[in-house]
Image (cartoon, rainbow over all chains, first blue to last red; front, side):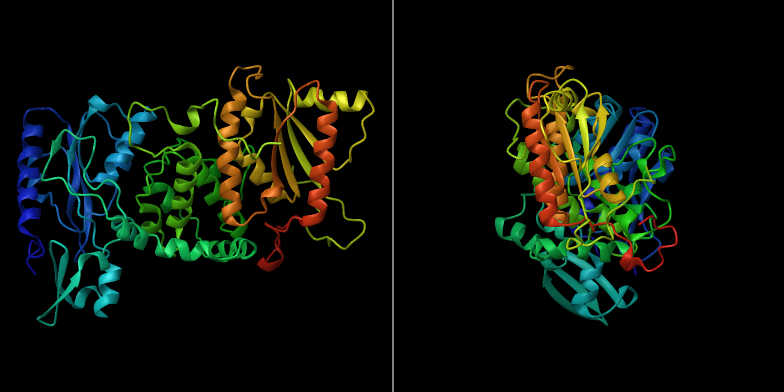
Length: 331
Length: 161
């Protein structure tokens, strides 16, 4: 299959623009490297491309599968960096700027107005075939055309987007230097509700059974720390999970310690988590981690009317306070 | 810390079961408040174990989780009233941190009564005694902390419980 077959005109235009902009940035010495996406080794995937070589620029792609939140690489990169950024990623970047982890002047944000990323698992479920049997996935506005055995099937795009893309609040990067296309509108209220379906079904579990539910989920956890590695908000130099004096938790994957790890991780990223969903996507044992992240996101919004990564001038949530912060829980 | 005697395997119905409450008290206010409760002969249950901290802002949510993990039935974080912090703002930071911690643990399914926060000044010995009495009573009602118990794990070779 021609790898560009699933590109719409709009994606292709953006891709061309990205390549010329990225090339110019490198040639003019405005950046030392570019962080973007290239085609992955498997069909319908992309993989991060970090390069300072302008010959590699032609490998950069924009398509409906650019799922990774690349801002995670910013804290480790040196020099000036150009980064391909979707709306959600731009919030992570703003959050990193708030935390003084990256300097705004050191990064050139190449914004991609993002109509949502396609969840291949949902496509596979929808057509009942797996990746190798699907010949093509093309997005045409709010329809997606899936080719199987030479037959074209049409579905509404909203059925195949990742849940958090479906309810996206900021599809077009707010903070950016170069915007590659026309801004995309945020999700409709209806889609926002639909995007919460899976999470709300967990909320319906009675409080007494919830702990048991999570204990069961986290019995599967391997403590591979993929959730931590992909999370742009998880930037501690040394994680509490690996401390030995004192040892907060055992390094072996035991249910209780796994759960404690994740609870603390969520508390640590409170006010930084932008609900990008990377933790859940990276989880090899499919623990619904985004439900936890989302809950924390909502708690933060409800208590402090704060949304992560919206305002680069705002102080980080837990490094600030208001005299009127809620304290009805305090005796 | 691992040597703490744990109550997790005991039954609520077991008449000898007493809840264990871990208190993180600010050395400028609540700790002095607890002292005052003692010197003024206020009676309160001996279920509380106290760790003195320099400020309520020192209390990391990790401490709370670790205490629950070790089998404490409840945790109390107590600091200065808003505006009275010895370090100007430590208690305000603690307030935000505790607010999200408490809500999040509640969502996860941990009884919110197990995590308590209070403002007790150095002159409020009576209030300290009252709070400890109330919390102990509440913990008795909800029973032993089993959130992290190992029973269902089946491989509890290194289990301390």
